[in-house]
Image 1 (cartoon, rainbow, N blue to C red):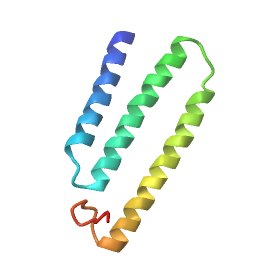
Image 2: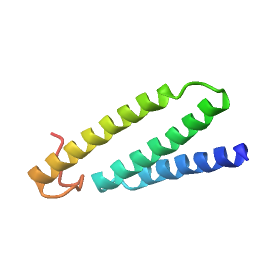
Image 3: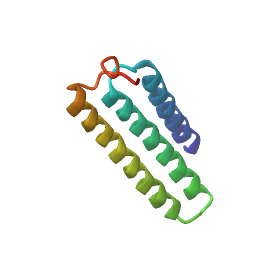
Length: 95
């Protein structure tokens, strides 16, 4: 049972990475795939900590850092939409 759950979580992680690498056009899709990757890592960390009978305080720290990462990503997305009008990377000049 545990092996199947680990396989599903690793499959989620790989799908999130494939979406992140293949969809470089929109910032919103990239942020969603990053959140999907973090969610799969959260599940994997939860299974690992439950398996070794460890405290779940690390999960709370991980969730706090995940929320901070999501808030930073949304603030970048909002500022990009306000300045350029869309979230395409093609219209965003890095120079």
